Amino acid sequence: MALQIDDLPATIRQAKRELRELLPNYKAVFKDVENAMLAEADRIADLRERGIPIIPEIRFSDIVEERVTAEEIATVKARGACVIRNVFDRSLVEKWDRDIAEYVERNHLDAKLQNRAEDKYFGQLASSKPQIYGVYWSKPQVTARQSAELTQARVFLNRLWKAESEGRVHFDPDHVPVYADRLRRRPPGSESLGLSAHCDGGSVERWIEANFRKVYRHVFSGNWRAYDPFDAAWRTEVEEIASPAVCSMFRTFQGWTALTPQGPGDGTLQLVPIANSMVYILLRALQDDVADDDLCGAMPGRALSIKEQYHAPLFRALSSIPQMQAGDTVFWHSDVIHAVEDAHRGTGYSNVMYIASLPACAKNDAYLKRQLPSFLEGKSPPDFPSDHFEIDFVGRATADDLTPLGRAQMGMTL
Ligand SMILES: [Fe+2]
Image 1: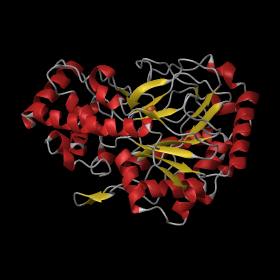
Image 2 (image 1 turned 90 degrees about the vertical axis):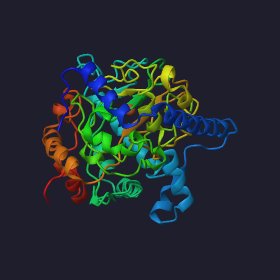
Image 3 (image 1 turned 180 degrees about the horizontal axis):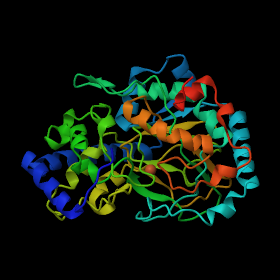
């Protein structure tokens, strides 16, 4: 269900009043959080400066052979992110990249982009959008989503979460519904087309909405060290403000699959690899230097922007992901701060398919039902700007391209 807020300033004032009453020592607790985050951000910055990998890297073959160690898993959970190498063979992905290029070129997508529906979602962020294409149903995207490989990788990721807690089962990690998302195709030499630091999956509602407050119950009670970002309790029941491009599904991890090689300096992804950094963001907004009707600039229906002015310690940890090859994937926890580098100084296209990790739950089943007609008709999915570029695209994936697994993941009855 979507959250409706009529008088936002009044609602924020009321929420802050309630949260401060619940946590009268919000200043002291925040000081403790700030010290811990500063120490962690410094540790990460120090590792980065010494050339030590910060984003954990896992070989896909280790997932298949169940050789991922407890230590590796602990690092993924602390950083809230990982790279999974070699999910697909490089030659297969290079063919996908060529097929996508041909698909968008022969259907004249660039001409259609001139008339695109306005996407306000990222409009408030300091940098503008990267080259994100409203293409959801190319054959390579549909093939990758339903592949056994990416399904196995995402079941592994889903299982990092606590699917059962507080006496309830929140989701089934072993089934991976489709969340059809877009493509990034970024030509070399593009400047100032990155994305400034943000979190997806809710902005002001994290402080306001009742189930979000339960997700963060240990933070708002001051017992913040008990907060587990991987505890799914109430995560599948939160209500977001409806907005184009706010995700209506519950994602365990956001992610993408690299279609081309890309690395630091190529306009690639940056992460704040601290899984519980949301603790800082939540309590920062309650401090006395933030106006009573303000949550550090959070805007309803937009990505939650992270700002130097308020969140400086976290920026120390902002790090580019390592060099990626075609067929590698990167995933980050749905609360993890991320950004896209402004300049692309590399020599080749930097292309990705956004394919997140999701588990089966009632919230996700409900979206599948709304998404399915858009697949069958080639429309933009319900969460996205209603450009519907692909309706008459030649070579679009159809139901005939789905495997039995693909049909199940799309929510079609077998
Ligand atoms: Fe994002």
